Length: 304
Image 1 (spheres, rainbow, N blue to C red):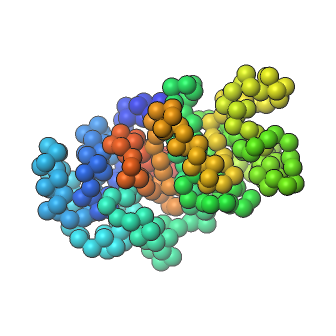
Image 2 (image 1 turned 90 degrees about the vertical axis):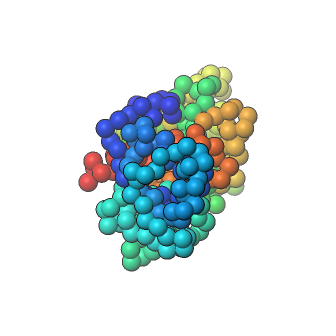
């Protein structure tokens, strides 16, 4: 079980092929080269070759050994990258200097894309010094106000990420503002439904989902003790399942900017992981995200 994001960079022996769409982006290119040098990935670059080599020369990066597909048209580059993953030439895909909407349109293409029956959802993984293991947060990046059916898919996507990271038991807190079910607070109703589904085996073996839980109970065993709340996961939660994007976005940014948390992010629900980093993410976060995507792609390949 991986408890620190830095440990993710030390894992060798499961190097997967990563295709990078519109690779002529400084931070992305630097993170990709680092991942190759660390023995984490085997990169395939798609984009403007002249611009990419200028960036590499300026930053002192060696990209000469990488497979390169020259394509200046961003939309075409995205299509090429997605098709590479779809036909097995690559194992997962990363967004470079391309709009998210363009890449995701290709990912969701019905004829040659990577869509499945599952919902696409975002999973962030946070490494915070004040917590004893990694925190998985979902979904603060894609789904605005998911229905109960969508939350079921979001949970399954998060479970896959956590298990790929070595969690044999995945403890999930379905968050709300309070612990009692209130018909006027849909988050509490949905959380209780998800708990019942988990108890009936909806999410497979090794998954403990409780809800509704307030954030303090999910992360603090002492808070649960003070409140007299009986829980199997309090203070030892792996996954924070948020009821809407506002809560997820707020928790994530608080971790990053107030707790100096390290992070990695991934889009799940497609045939392969999609590394969809923000322009605001630093190089380390991009590298962690690549390593996370590699870990999940390797795990998926072993399941097939």
